[in-house]
Amino acid sequence: MAKPTESSKQSGNDSTISNSLLQRVRNRDEDAWKRMMEMYGPLVHRWIRRMNVQESDAADIAQNVFQYVATKIDEFRRDTPDQSFRVWLWTVCRYRILDHYREKKLHPGGHGGSTAHHRIMNVPDLPEQPEPDDSAEGVRELAGVVRRAIAVVQGRTADNTWLAFWRTAVEGDEPNDVAEDLGVSVWTVYKARSRVISRLRGELDDLVNVESFLHPVTEPDEKPAAD
Image 1 (cartoon, helix red, strand yellow):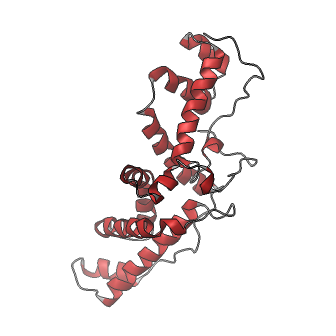
Image 2: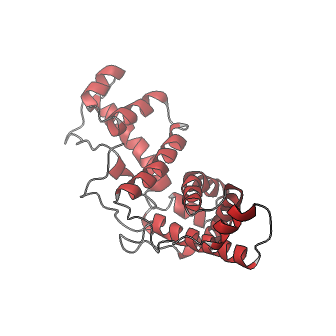
Image 3: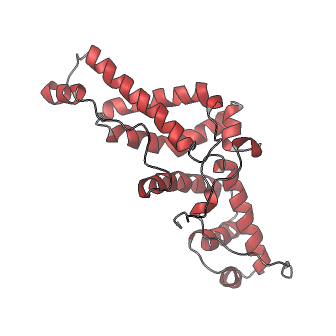
């Protein structure tokens, strides 16, 4: 995937896309909620494991994270560029991890011997904020979310439409070359690319600036001849 450029900005606020994943989650759409967990679950689990949490406890903490998100999702706002969903989600995750260690300190019983006891009594220093979205680590984490969103959209997209998108947006091929290989007009390639990107926006544009991870193309001022 292309790395976000300095000029790539998140634009608008979450209310501008009425059919966005975030809006559907706020409307208590069960499928949208499952999709959000699929996209962000691996990231939350990774955060938890990095904070010296045993695998046996990580699933419970992740469940607590998403239970909180489910009840408080209406409180998330993206009024400024630094108020990203990833930062908000980390804040939720951070407090659930701290709660876990506090509980273990109050009730240290259980199995695991001295190694487990040492882990429990040494609470990691959890940062207030994750790495910034535009940092190397932030880009990697968001790229993982985008990859999972792309996989979801691919399953609902015709093969040629998907190839036109993938080759121009992800691999960076020229639309003219893609059109020749697929045996269609250049305008068909542009339309296919735009259609898939629109679907990706519906999944993530309120949560991640999707297009900052894709290769840009400049569409012609006039429509090429139709197929």
